[in-house]
Length: 363
Ligand SMILES: Cc1ncc(COP(=O)(O)O)c(C=O)c1O
Image (tube, rainbow, N blue to C red; front, top):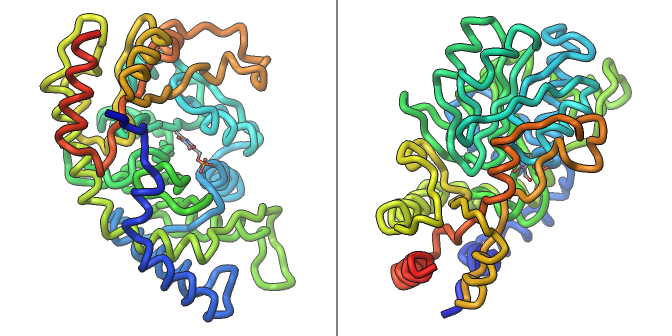
């Protein structure tokens, strides 16, 4: 049996007819920047997330950067603000802070995501926090409550958690002061190219973000702040509208796969996340942790199972972050050294899931 990690073509083929129509509609509209398709998607995504405002951007990195730039313009964060973030994340979270002219303050994680324990020692030294819903799992509500008690704003890197719902029934995107989404094609809600969005209930933050993402302009010829050019393409917006209505059903399917893995993978060499990880999650990635990762991956590959790694090298060890290379985050480093992502997507069949479990258990 051959099982791809993520059959992107097949996943998108489900929307082929709608997408063809969207292409015609956008083409015929004569509006190729902004316009009705972008506005419609922003409105739909705001309704879906349960927030007042969605500001679409060119990608997820820009969404995060623009939030921080907007907070600076509004005087809510100082120049060179210190931003606490988990060391265990994708490099984009670090880069957004740098691109906003601020300082990343990474902390090691003791589990997989940021917890109150992880940030307790540093919270007094920083101006704000970025939480990361890595693998699709929502950061625990306690972190938000703790930060609020310390009067530190929290922004969420929600690039992997589209549609996840927390214990209080709140959707990803409506939990932090502002959240950043990526619509990179492999995401649970993915476009056919780049795309991103900011969600927030704060109208001033939304208005400033919208301005900053569009050259900082007030109108065609007047610019009141130094902005960037980061706009969601109308074609991508139309494709995203086509996919948004399937997101809940897709996430349900992902949950079924994840639950099956949780209940049936039993191998001392293959460590799963703890039980709580199953809930309040979009199951963007199903991570397992294996000491001899390369050996495990080639074993699976020899049995026709394609896997992925999220991620092999943590940001603080990247050449791009030479200034952080001397830092040591042992738990983060261990996660990066051992993580393997198993196939987990809405089109997986029972046969495929059973086969993967059997092969993993025989390792
Ligand atoms: C955790 C995380 N943050 C940020 C991003 C950045 O998103 P984008 O690639 O759309 O810029 C990604 C996706 O690549 C991500 O996985």
